[in-house]
Image 1 (cartoon, rainbow, N blue to C red):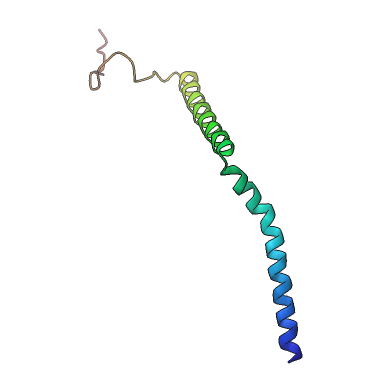
Image 2: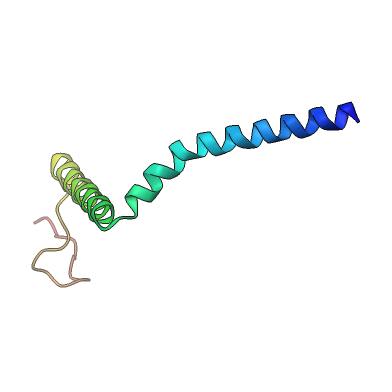
Length: 83
């Protein structure tokens, strides 16, 4: 009987500890779901996307790779013949 009581007390203490720690993990999650938090996260995502695009384009220019989105239609890149 004494062993069961110890397990119950230990279980309750562990449960209380989990609830106390969950406050620190759930509070930021709940704050992010407010309209201001959602707008902030969307702004961060848009900034990250734009930064990645800029880095990609800069790396292509540094390597000397021409950008393929220019004025020619797709499929007209024929090799040039040297005279």
